[in-house]
Amino acid sequence: MPANGGRRRNDRRCGRVWHGLTARERDVMERVVARKRNRAIAFELGVGIKTVEVHRARAMEKMIAESLPELTAPCILCGRYTGKP
Image (cartoon, rainbow, N blue to C red; front, side):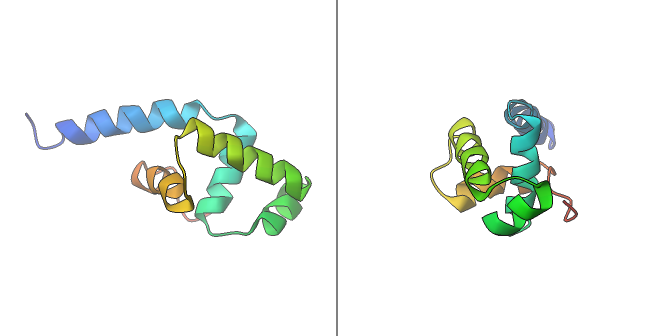
């Protein structure tokens, strides 16, 4: 197997998971990975804190994550976080 074969499989999986999120869930996830608090995310997106919590919870469910590190790791590994939400 080529050295990057595993990477390509991982990239495809990441793409499927990432594209399985709604646009708003992706907006929230980019900010969560940037270590922003729910209150700051809500302010930036012009929504309530509860709305951010719901989007974050749905993203966790879709990404099969039980903790924040499990939630953010795929975003970082897949290159979905650039450091500029």
